[in-house]
Image (cartoon, rainbow, N blue to C red; front, side):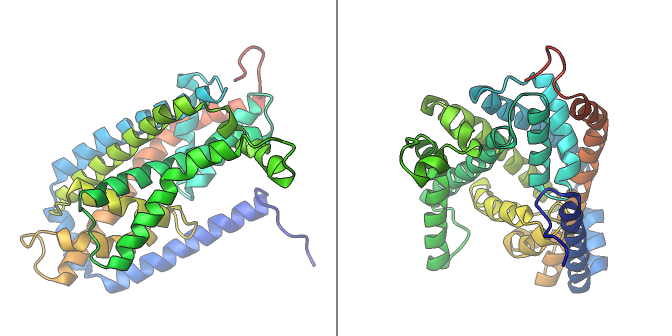
Length: 334
């Protein structure tokens, strides 16, 4: 019997890539078999292409910059003094790994922090673990705001109650973990867990800085919401921003699952039921036609976004490769 594959080994990485591409092929096969392909092509032909291309050209660079500002703000607040220009290249290169799974991009960023500093894996990865919890908290706040305003797109009381509970729990995660990470080391197993390197960023971040880093991430999420709203409008689907902010966390969670490449197939299946009802009658008169419109929207925008980000990633990759190979150079560590 062969030894079990450890996380992060080449064998497990290859297995994740194979699983993601296999899942993508199966899901895209299902989409192709259940959509009206001529109607989808017609929807793409009738789309507002200037709006589509214009959104792509402003939104991808804008989210790239805002995301990098937010992450470097967090890193500096937890003691990682990374130059913004250098992190831009690390973030850009991470887009290539994001194509397979978002967390692989975070692993690359943690690897660069580890290589260019004297931190261990736990300490280097801690800010990026915290980043996930900050994003969950931001989604929670925005969903709660939409629900308070009566903008839930779901009529089922059970679904609404689940959204309330889930959003409230997500909102509370960062302050809870910050408090837990400060548990005294003499508190037995709780103290040992609280002192783990993966929670170092939660210990280092001052409570007064939490609104700042949350605000930076909220700006990014709102920018993504505006980008998606503009993309949808190009296909004749007008979705109010508060409703979109309820859909986005669910779609992000689906894309986060390592069952497809960049959410291809997985998020598209869910988008059909979320966005289909908002397609204008002028664009599609039947449910099947609305499904085709949403499939055209999702496929074209996901692929176009991947393409633009891949170009950014390829441009940044040589610097990151050199940074990983040379490690912490004299005077240029983080």
